[in-house]
Image (cartoon, rainbow, N blue to C red; front, side, top):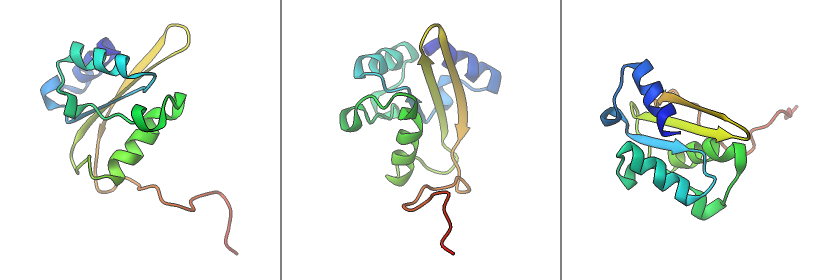
Length: 115
C-alpha cells in the first residue's frame, strides 16, 4: 500500500508532506502501523477505527471517512489519501481534497420515499 500511496502522490504532483490524513484499509492495526512507518507519517495523521469497529472489510475506508468528517478530524482543504488492498494481488490508492461541499451522511438516508 505504501508504494501505491507514493505513486498516487506523484501522479497528483504532491509529496508526503502535503498529506493531512491517511485512511487505509483497516484489516488490522499492525498493517496500519507498518504503512505509516514506511511513509514516515506521524501517528496522528493516520485515521483509524479498527479499535472501535474491527475489520469491516471493503467498508472500512468509507466508514472511517464518515466518522472522521462527523468528528471534526478533517477540515476543508485537507489532503486525504485513501489506500487499500484486496484478495489476490490487488491494491489501489486515491487522493481526496476534503471540502465543505462534501456530502455529509445523515441518519435516515435511503432509497425510500416519504410520500
